[in-house]
Length: 314
Ligand code: G3I
Image 1: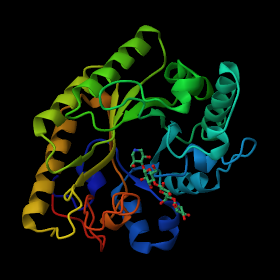
Image 2: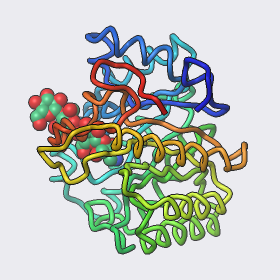
Image 3: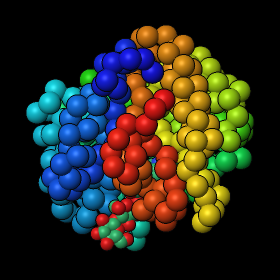
């Protein structure tokens, strides 16, 4: 990645991490790296539906605002994640009943209240997250069931609320899943043909050391060919994907991980400058990774900083 000691000085595009407001307050080493190494910030959880909109008539922006204040205080770009998803949906939305118009009003109100709240403070939004299954069909969710054209409508509503925000469709696992990739490309073509304001594609890049280089390069090329901005939005490289309890993070695993990260950065550099929205890691230290916490894989080391927050050699 070059010789400069700080990550953000080694690359010519924004480099970010998803962050957790509690760690920014409680953990000095975390705060230090968050401040010095990155110039873009994504909230790992605190702008999602369940957290910002816990009850039908109540929004709670307190934690999201904390992260935004941190980013602003340090002139970092803030990326918004995420407006429409099937996960981390509050109970009241899951239980919502009504006709298509009522569902539309509910989702529009959610999207526009959140986007307006952060207008001018958030540069871009993951408007719609993970709408397609691995074999390319539309994921059956409360959104697809109740608002058949919810993807296009969500982009329109977000654009009305903040015409300056860069609006992304974000998804994972495109590499090695050609039907999923094709479904995303078909969706982009359809939205573009209908003049729906989609500006970017988020490739989450939750990959592992066995991911095939040509698959990764292939999906990057296909995504770039849309002409949209490209964000590697949630990068991590798992070294122990099978969660083997006897796994040792040895030199071989470290070097395989380093090679994979290098390939990802190299492929990103090949994207035309005007399409480079940036690369975001999915948190900072290995100990902060969702693979350890949410996925309960204690012997996983997927990030750029180790358990003591030392930078790994890549
Ligand atoms: O903070 C609460 C705690 O108070 C509670 O006691 C505990 C009990 O379950 O839950 C804690 O919240 C958890 C939260 O992470 C914070 O750790 C949630 O249960 C847990 O569901 C949540 O997991 C998040 C996951 O999305 C939810 O699907 C991960 O942190 C987050 O990294 C992950 O991020 C997603 C992206 O948004 C979209 N792409 C995939 C990516 C990885 O799954």
